[in-house]
Length: 401
Image 1: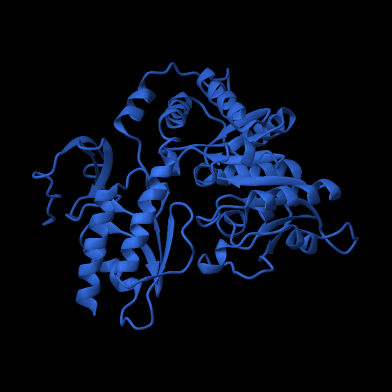
Image 2: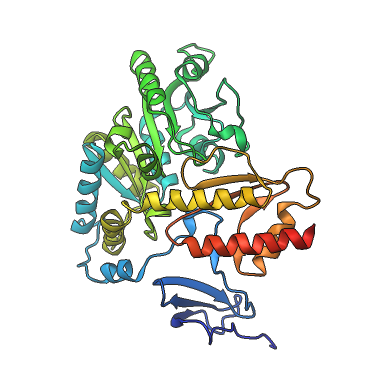
């Protein structure tokens, strides 16, 4: 059809698989292994621009060669029918690490959050959340659909907003929760759960806020839940253990993909009785695993090999931040972990839309539009990728100026 195959001959990559070759459903996808770093990339037929550096999110991380090999060396069982010992071992390990009684392995953080709400909240009750939280913005209204409850998006009283930029660094306090929850009034949806997030948009929830809000929840009989998808970053930034960070919470959701590099998987943590109920709900949601041992093995590998290197992502983010400032850009939020929030000053005549398109031609992917952008560092981004981004960004700025 006149389409040119991806040019890979001069790159140290090897073809490790192909799917949908000749399919009428769309272009075929080919997976290439980067022999230098053990990473997998995909390129579509007819698109010779390969992705060489991806700063859009830490969700784009891919399993290393060693992780993939660990996934091949497990004995599989049907987890719904008989139970899978690989999964139970992972659940016990994570529960112990976080100081919780039990854990439940699930496909995603959205599922763990939604299972928790379905198990704890009743119809005509409410859940207080940060206005910038994943639970409020990015879970497809699941709380209303699954649990028939009302979310109370709350903006920190000291300022900040829910637009995912500068003000998102601020966190809810005891006063925000006390002033935001609904009482047991016949006209209102009584607040049954307070759900916090750590980190949120790259910002670490101060531990004293968590402890003070836990005190409010205890006084008013509310369940306190943590969306800890990136709690590993909070631990690396504060020096506190994940058990210490999660101690104030009745339940927590933690992610094994993102910065830890597993292909799939989040765990819900809490009392055994709560996990038992959530396991039944998981089955109802269609989330029962048939042979999940390969994914549990990836999760175990991530715990053993990738937790300790999360701080590396923060150092890479600092270098990236310094480089952006040297190019004349501004930071719209203080750097705390692996999220770099940048802004183009008004004196420049271009936007991140134009920069994004220029960078894409060089195989560098970013998220951004207008005058704001977010850069995320992770285990698939090294100093070399940061240097590439800054070099191509400087060239793009020079071209567009």
